[in-house]
Length: 102
Length: 230
Image (cartoon, rainbow over all chains, first blue to last red; front, side, top):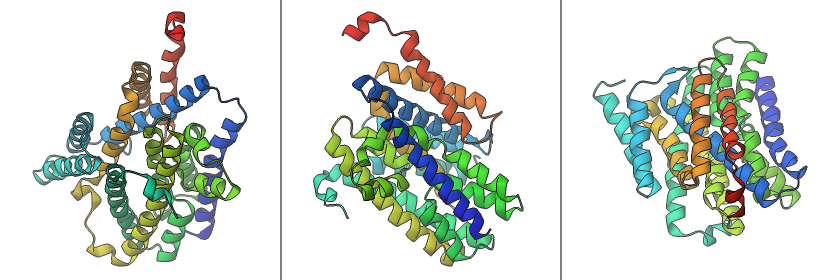
């Protein structure tokens, strides 16, 4: 790696991050628009959760990873504190891997 | 730093601490893997400070150290980061105050700071305090983790062995779950997720989650007038 890659990634990432509020500033943010924007971010986050739970480098992640995320999700649904969600999700996946489940 | 801290209740601060602990360990692993690949510590640290976007850092570094070209490495990282556009559109208002806040708030926009700000709901003040507390905490632990990991790499456990790759999606899932109780949002999320999963077999990482936005068609398709009136 060189400084050039670091600088290119840093500048590009900053501009990407900046474009969101910039675009937001170009429209009149009514309640309706606010709802759409929030829903958009929620949908992207949900898709990020799902894809990162079942895929690693574009291929099936194995059972241990989605099982851990699922356990964490169920606990979150039951309104468990986030620390418990973290420990249960990580613990489930770690134990399954320890037991030889990919 | 945040007088914001005082305004958040203990449960929320505990949640943020749990997240920060996870991000710290992933930061350790980023530093450790970078060192193992022969990347000098100051370069991995500069990346963590100036890019501050974990997935893209791993991707770009992985491609570069494997001998991929500069364009391929940087492009992969930037494509992964495109999801920050809808994030910034959704929560940009939270940090769009003074010039300094705009610049720093923009740089500290991540999956987690977005998800926490969204989870604060309509309470603008709470969203602002939450955003800054999460953003600054994560910036500190991510960079501390990178530096320590770069030096102590061999001593550190593999995040996969610890199951941390399950913990991070689980945190985001927990944060978006209240929003998914709205049926329209849930429908959009499910449809979008299905599209993203299918697209993952065709498109480079980063684009499928953006394609999930087509899930929002449920807002128009079923926008019955009577519901608007409600």
